Image 1 (cartoon, rainbow, N blue to C red):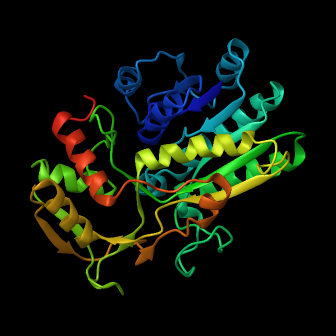
Image 2 (image 1 turned 60 degrees about the vertical axis):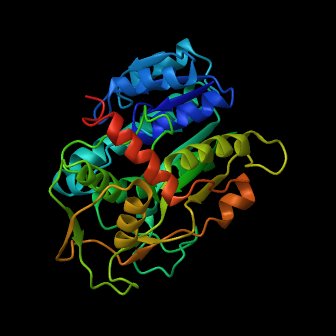
Length: 341
């Protein structure tokens, strides 16, 4: 049985669908700090399968221990955490306390119950901005905001714990930019307030929720002057977690006890902001008015993955295109104009 922390979130909910469709048994926990109970209901609707769910905070050791007592947990996929970069700059102590405490608590309970496998939800934000592209897993690490540092520190905490714990292994999945939604339109990204990420801002602007899309700078050293990112469909990302679990479960050729593997999950291709607007419009027919603004502090010109390691170790590759993601996100937006509310 796989424990999913933060399972009601954007990536967590899509991963549960992928796990259930691959006949894994799951138990899910979430405190709905930045997610919605309806996501759990929709996952059950999509898959036609039921599973145990507990509303709790992973930082609460007694509560999370009770889940391990009730269920025979074999592996953990750890999504739970606060995730807004801008907010992390405003309230750094909240982010450090929540994101790091939850990981330490989870590792302690895993050790007490002899659970040997963790898949950790990390991020490309752990890479320094001055690395050459595409980013490889042994590139220089370093962050520009507290959110990124919590991912960096959690990677180190997990790595050190794995080294010191007999039989434990872990995969650190470094995501690039998740976009898209489930093809049913029942689950998708549901940001609160004005979205921090490009694609939800595009879909909400196309839907008339915002007057225009703000394009933060058109004077970067890129073909059209706008920032380039590696956008990965959330369903491809979810499939990467199933591949990581299978990798840990192999007796030969997989991850050995006492080892940690950091693996990029990305497409290996970059898309600029203006290219994203163009593809979205061509795919959906929806117009996206935009305005060029001054550069935003902290944005890098270009960031995209080298996904070779994921292909070699996990036998995982992306299958969905940027246009697929636009189509799925627009369907989610139209079916859920107010998100899950």
